[in-house]
Image (tube, rainbow, N blue to C red):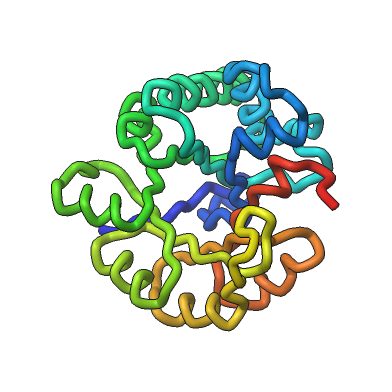
Length: 230
């Protein structure tokens, strides 16, 4: 059975989909903050702060409902240490807060999901297809990224819990690559029944355009990793 990324709404007792997903990127964060020599433990503090809604780390951004920890440049050993550190920090401080922290989602490495028992994982589509075929994802809910309608249909068919579609608007992370636009997002949403999250160049001035579509929500990297970006 496909399960979606539902979170409990304490005020109503109902479950709801995440609307805002923050996506981590150590390289962006360190370039903005000039912290090339800062260690990953300090970065884990920053990510935990995002997940817990600490305004010192949010820089005026909305507290995310989920935090996708995407660090493709890290080898597995370092990634596992980073994710475990963020997980433990959030778990420790969550006990002192009334509001639930952001849902933590590891990227690429199933071991990160299994060692923390978080139950979630995000994978590139080719890796997702391979892991499904090899039955590596037993007990995990996995999401994936897509760039075409056909990929979205494939992802749903093989059991994706959600998909991330992009890039929607122009972004510094994809310099020189044309955005796919809102029409593309609408086509993706119409082609599947699982939740779709838009990514790419989404900021405070254009997020309302995404919310006019059938997308479940948005993923934002630069807004969180490059605070106060112009």
